[in-house]
Length: 158
Figure 1 (cartoon, helix red, strand yellow):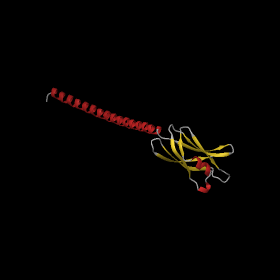
Figure 2 (figure 1 turned 135 degrees about the horizontal axis):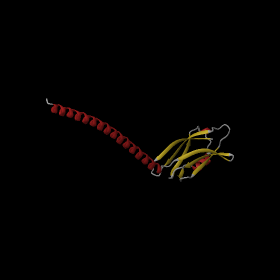
Figure 3 (figure 1 turned 120 degrees about the vertical axis):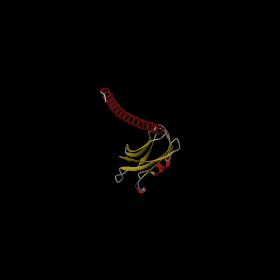
Figure 4 (figure 1 turned 60 degrees about the vertical axis):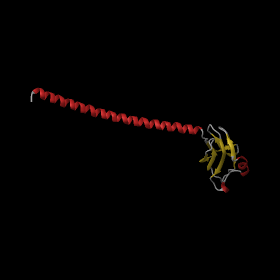
């Protein structure tokens, strides 16, 4: 072999090595790019999920339940804290009937509430005495404007 042939073989080997290095580098960059695209795609899916949940939330009523002192008496209050009406609102305290502080006549006169508008509330007299519980679990149920019935367990304490 002549020195020109050896030189061209060496240059060919060097070119092959450089090509392999560049090829491996490009594969690494392509893998990172694919990982980044995958992460971006997952982020976009989560953002879409959040937007859809918020959109559904705009058409869903949310109610709050609390127990407060009104002068010398105690009262339960259910408030619509959403932007849409809640229909057929009902309250069920999770206590034994004999331990219930609800005044039967007051409850029967007000419940179920046909329509509770945004920001509105309904109060009930709570006949609390020294032997009464100071916290109550309750189930609130209502119908959303789209017709879905919701039951939610909640908690109110003094």
